[in-house]
Image (cartoon, rainbow, N blue to C red):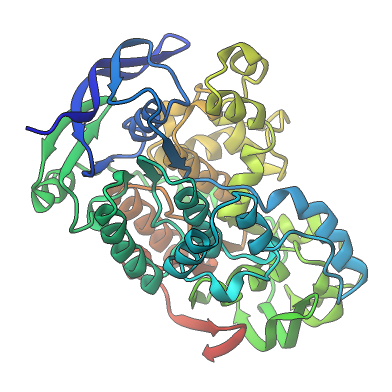
Length: 501
C-alpha cells in the first residue's frame, strides 16, 4: 500500500471556546484528488487551513510525508485588485482615458520568478495569454480566479488546496477547470478540493462529507453524497408578516434604469460599448454573460459605484444622473449584494480579524477588539453603514429579525460576523440588503458559497418577494439552477456589447 502524504488523527479546533472541528481522522495518498464537501459552515475551510499550515489544530496530530512538503492554498476570497481601488476611482472620475500605473497580469505572474517554460505552460493552461498586458484592476471575478490558480501552479506545490474554485466562473470556464484538474492530477500533485456536490470532478479519488465540524463520511460514491445532502430538511418560512414590513417609504417611479448608448472605457480598453437598456418598475431581469463580458461594470453604473456614469446618458428612478443627487440617495433605494461588496465588508469592520485568522495569530486582538455581531451587520443595512450601531426602532428590529429567520441565520444573531463561514456571511449580507425594503434588488452572484439547501431557500424567497410586493430585480448568475423562477426578461452581454435583449 502507498504511504500517505498526509495523515490526520483526531484533529479538533476551537476558537473562543466554540468547537469548529471535532475528532477528524483520515489519510491522503500522494497524487490523490480529495473532495471536501458539505453544508455551509460545516468546517471545510477550517480543515483546509489546518492542512495548509495556516492554522494550528487545538488538539490531535497531523503528519506529512516530508517536512519540506510544499502546500499551496487558493482561497475562496481574493483581493489583489483592491489595493488599487481608490486610485482607480478618482482617476476615472476626472479622466475617461485614465489608466494609472497598475500592474498587469504579466507583472503579477513574473513576481513568482518561474522558468519561462513553466510560465508559458501555466498561462496556456489557464487561458490567460490574451490577458497578460491587462491591468489586474480590470479583471472580472472569473478572470481573477484564473490568475489565482496560475500563481498557485507556478509555486510547483506538492499539495494544492482549492477552496471553492468554481465560484464566479461561467459555464465554459468551469468545464475548462474540470479538464485542468485532470492534467494537474497527471502531474502527481495531490489536490484537496472544496466544492459543492454537483461540481465533484470525475478524477476524484475520495469524497469527504463534513457535517457540523465532523467528518461523517468517506466515500467514492458522488451520487450517494448528492442524495444524502438532498435529504436534509428545508426549514419552514413564515410569510405572515411580509406585508407589514414591506410598506414602501420610497416615492413611486416608472422606470428604474434607462441607459442610452452608454460607453465605458478604462485607458484604451472599452469595457461597455454602446449599451442601451431599460428596466421598468416591477420587471425581473437576468443579466448574463461570460466572465469579463462587462456585467459588473454595468451594475456599477446603476449602483452609484462608477463615476463614468456622469459621462453617459443614464437615468435612475426617472431622473438623469448628475442632476445633484448624492450617491447615497441612489443607494438607499437599492438592495445590493455582490462578491465585491462581500470583500468590502471583510476589509471593513472584520478585516483585522480575517487577517488574524489567516495567519493563525489569535494574539492580534482580533477576537476581542471587534465584537460586531451578525445582528449588527444585518442591521447596518437600514442606513447603508457597515457595522453601524444606530439605534433601531421596534419595527426595524422586527424587520431585521424577520429576514434573519427567513434566511435561517437567526441562530447566528449574537455571533461575531468574522467567526461565521463565508457562505453564512453571504446569507447575512442578503438579509442586510432586504432590511430597508428597497424598491430595486441587484443580486450579483448572490448564491456564491451557499450550499444547495441554502440556494433553494434563497431563490424561493426572491420569488416570493418579487411576486408579492413588486420588487424590481436584476439578477446575475452563471448557474441556471440558481435563477429564481420570477425572471421575465434577459439581457446578455458579450465582450461589452448587448448580444441579446
